[in-house]
Image: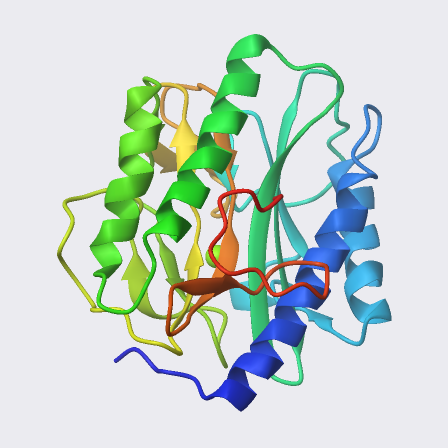
Amino acid sequence: MTTCRSAREIDCLRIAGRVTARALEALVKSVVPGATTGEIDAYAEELIRKQGGEPAFLGYHGFSGSICASVNDEVVHGIPGRRKLIAGDLLKIDIGARVDGWYGDMACTVAVGEISPQARRLVETTKESLLAGIAVVRPGAHVSDIGHAVQGVVERQGFSVVRALVGHGVGRQLHEEPPVPNYGKPGNGVVLKPGMVLAVEPMVNAGSWQVRTNPDGWTVVTAQGCLSAHFEHTIAVTALGCEILTVSSDATLAQSPAVAL
Ligand code: MG
């Protein structure tokens, strides 16, 4: 059952989204060669708490970080720790904040120093695929239309979409109904209605789409050892289209492919 949120509830989710986005915006600037993922994680917690939020991931099913920090072939759910970033790394930061019981969830991929042209193209394609997925969100569209749009952008560039992990609803819980796959045929699944709130989060591999989980029980890596990228926004379906909730400015962004990630 997918919940439709009232205007007042969307206001609360907008606040949580903004706290999340402001934290990530500041955090990205701390990503430099020599920084450890643990240091970046500690800064993330500080940034969220300073704004009156709580890190949504900390303690979630026993997760030990405030962010997921996944490097290179790590797709998602990397555990922050002593790993030192080096120039050429691709760091995926997934971050969530809870504010007054409401959640924001977003992710981005950050280049550590100079990265290869292929890595650059992977990052740009993944960002573009998220925006393409968001661009089809409007009342009456089906949830699978999002994944169809994402997959089209990704596969045109010769990359592949991870299947084993999907986006989700967001609200009073970090993960709510419905699942939001990043692949598939259009016209399936939940029909979108104003007030639905979704996390759209393409995970894109430079090789095959298959993934496996490391022995730590968390870190999802590409099966082939190839690079992976990830971007995510929490969005609300509106009467006319959608609004991205995980933005750092006061501006209300209707669906706009020009929005910065
Ligand atoms: Mg998410």
